[in-house]
View 1 (cartoon, rainbow, N blue to C red):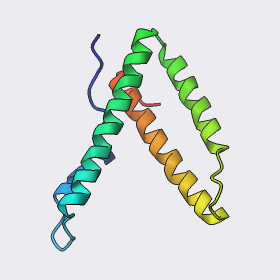
View 2: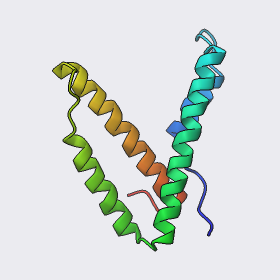
View 3: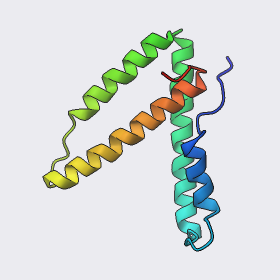
View 4: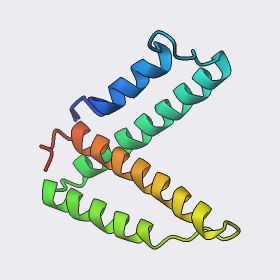
Length: 116
């Protein structure tokens, strides 16, 4: 079962390049931060790969994958984070939603789905 490549292209690739090769005048990240970022990158990639394989095993059509992704984004938008004030909760929610959407885009890229 072959799954396409290219989960981390475009903006993601630029972010990774900036992480390891900062522009002149920018501060270079220390080894611990690079290690943590690389670990998170690897975890995200493995999760995306697992979901892509699951969709392949289930013979999910591109429409089904997009519907499942849309439904999960709708549920995610309703999440609240107890213990945070409203501004913190909104900020955390927005960052979480952006990460989930980026990972869903990665899953679709691994499946070779054209971007809509």
